[in-house]
Length: 146
Image (cartoon, rainbow, N blue to C red; front, side, top):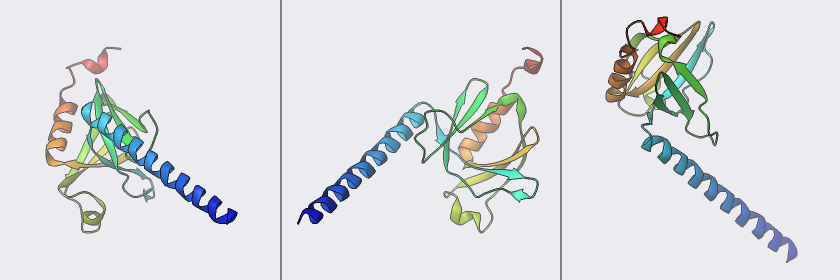
């Protein structure tokens, strides 16, 4: 009977931990969305092709930076940060047949260049329009001022 009690206590504790983790992730996502965040998937390229698959996240503009947070992470800081002047868009396309199953419905894929690195981001059509407008909204000669 003691073993059964211990197993029950451990299972209940695990269930509580999972519930707390889900609530924390939900609250974190809510705060990011309230602060202007938008759904943005990402995959980073390498010289041999794509290093990995799509990773779900939330993008957020902060002045001259685009911050990207992983959706399923407890980290309070962004996983990646892109400076506006270092970021360029090289292509725009619809997801291919395989990506249709990996990405949320209605997303478009933008190929971006960040220095020597190639990054693909996926977002909704309105978010991609806002992204392109944000990139183009840099002040003239802003790269000359330090």
